[in-house]
Image (tube, rainbow, N blue to C red; front, side):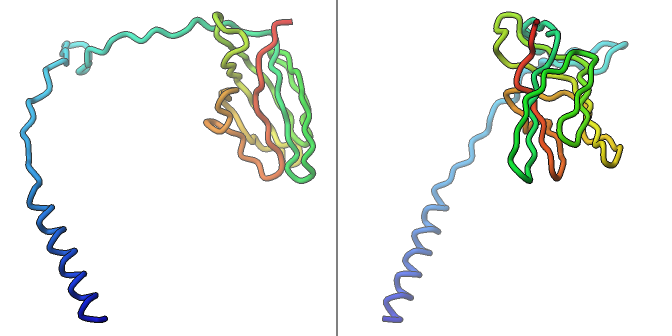
Length: 152
């Protein structure tokens, strides 16, 4: 049995070595020069302009809070410039924007979240409704994320 295993191992190594000898290296042409150099500006690549969808600000942000210990959730509608208590957190909304062409689409809100127990800032920045984990609140007990912007 042992000689059979050794024979199979050597056969596999020989096959691997033969396959390695079949690799060919191909030289590629250099990339075309697309850089523009100006004395007043650093080196800039000519990139096609990307159009951004027009965004509008809502009058409030609808947020959802989760208490991870007992599994309770709460939805809170916070007006722009306002604050609301979400379990043990205080959430301030600076702005809430959404695509004009798709009002029910991808909302994003500027939030400042403070832990009322410690008084420290738990989160500050933009949170995106469709990707809450992209820029998320990092708290051991509570979670807060944006659902949408409201225009009422």
